[in-house]
Amino acid sequence: MGNILILIAGPAGAGKSTLGDALRAVASKNGTCCLHVSLGDALRAAEVGATNDFHSGTSGALRRNEPVDEAVVRALLHSYLTPRPPACFVVSGYPSYERQVPDILNLARGFDRTLLVSLQCSSTTAIARVVHRPPRTGESTLSASAARRRYGVYDNDTRRAIMRLERRLETVSFNTEQLTASFIANRLHAVLMGSANPIVRSSQ
Image 1 (cartoon, helix red, strand yellow):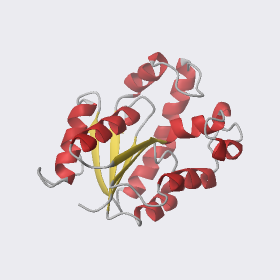
Image 2 (cartoon, rainbow, N blue to C red):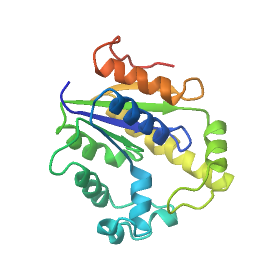
Image 3 (tube, helix red, strand yellow):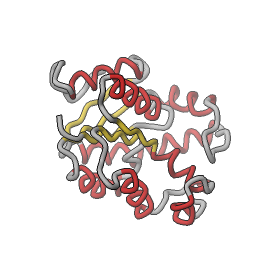
């Protein structure tokens, strides 16, 4: 199988971290060493000082709803790959911005296989999920207007990143209003292990 990089992208509230956790659980259950990093959670933890090595680099950007310097993102991800990457490295919330495409393609070169998983759901569902979910590390409860701004980032920037990456990377898309994280995780694991049909462009 070689080592695999799985990137999970989509709007806030689509279930990226939930799928990442489900993938880690399925892989571990089947004897594969899998590490899941929720990029947003990891950066927020760094910002509040829980990860001191990267605290200064975030400079309070997330609290101001601003992007974090990409050098910090690169360094943070690299820290999980040293001294050697896990058999399966799952990063949820990456990409968020189109400018991250070159870094992602560079990261992919260190893996035998890279899969981009694009999660989709309606703006109404995504915003409702964000507003009603418990706050995460370093995050306050979000208002509906703040949740709409987050969806706007996906609509205006993340989509363009996904469109560029799907020309270069193996890509699949799932609608999380129709499919559970457990179903998607088991489906992806079966495909990656070669016990199911090859991944197609869209599985909605």
